[in-house]
Image (cartoon, rainbow, N blue to C red; front, side, top):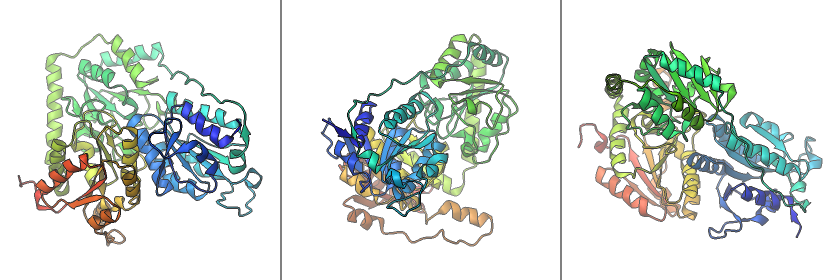
Length: 542
């Protein structure tokens, strides 16, 4: 039976292992929906999850990628669908996440002519080119398997970046008689033996080693743990590197790159092992690190070895395999006395951080102490750009990687809820919690209905602190009148009720704990509003 190009495209995605696509149908994508289903129990078709905005669809696909490390897929119309989803593309580009955006495009004969056809962008691929590893328009059906091969090679064997593939509506409808098959993923690059020996030489001659862990080390937990224990290296994680080693490990300062107390110790190191991190401005909020030691960088992307900071030795390859090879060559273990000294340094840094907390951060800390006691260890926390999550980066401990979502690279607003939906769809048995500011929640609030439709047990904790509190604080520091940062909030309880969801204002600790525990069991989202000025968040209160 002959099928359309759009149908066979979806079937090829299934062969690459895609099980779920997030999107909103439109007149330019209808042919794709011949091969999709919205039923959870149809194993023969990819499941489609309806978002309420294409940005939400992109963020859901991003959440899938964050939770699994594998590609999340969104399907949108041309024109406004693409522009709406572009924020998610940019965020995935900044945070090195594998997102595939499939979009429609007007008829091939109209492209580039500016004739005013429906959903027209005269050069649509140029809109997303700066936000993707590549953006291409399909010119014939047989382009599709070639472009998907290129996309999945990037997703699974190189530094993951988003990809955008547009298929014009006339190409979607063309018949395809061949059986497209996926191409095996090529191997990842491998660090050279010579560079590995150079790195070992630097390690052996160093007295004070600091290891910076980024998101590129998420799959190297066992190898990195062995390395830092053997060397007695103090570990500072970036936001994306939280949990690569358990945040409670005695050598780890979790999220320490954002804290001056940890960066001061870094400045005194004679060797920095930077594993899977760009060492970018968004990792520390201050721009450049003060680095006086030599640097060994481990990165799958050769362009990053001398980016921002020149590496003394660059190891280009997968973090897991590269660190495994380094471990096999180590021959100079740390002494117990040195190890104790480093552990004491970690304690000292953490005490300094505690001593320097602001009044708001102390309230955040009080909240996180309670939350950590009631949330299961395996919980995923999906956060937005808000003051609560900024504190959580360094003050909230998680046991493993891919459990703390934070839009550090692009720092968009509105991702927390749809990211959580994508994560929960990918890992339905894993608890997923939303931590979002009142301002950021309003960016993607309609996706609450998607969570309800999917019957997701999703606690949504809204930290209500009067609008865009971080910007308010910044304006005050700069002696700027508060303009545009104190918008009116809805009654979140009534809003939840209108969306068929549970809700509560948690004005004391007992209500919060009870509501949170119930929310984990409810077959529906639950909004829990926590106001920053609640008395139970006072540091002195029990």
